[in-house]
View: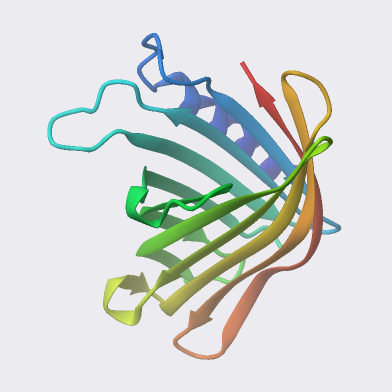
Length: 197
């Protein structure tokens, strides 16, 4: 296993391990892996049953992305349900997202605060098919280091495989506009599995 890959996996496991492990009455925790031709994304999702301080009930997410170019990106988000936008079979989550990227090019490190949104539409009930769209944007004023902004857009379809496992397939555009030029971390189809535990 390449050195950067083992470091990335260990870092992701550490992030999950340090999270508070309290009983969750509202929902289950999820682990997710997404693979494309040249990249891997690991995610941990945990709905919060008891809001901390003044945070509304929502969903905490942690992610770790790495690709063949040895770009490594850690991310964290806290999405809340946009109840006002709820329509039959459609739900929308919105909230802040943070990215920390160690790019393969020397002295090209990026840290960004962004606003993200996720829309889920249940297309079919039997068999269950859900269409998911995600969009995250960090403007120049909230992007630090050697970049001007960050874009992360995902569209995919999800289908349950078992009671605990959901499979998905889709397309992702993940790019960082650097001060000089831009770098596309991913622009490709991906496949993945999400496990509920």
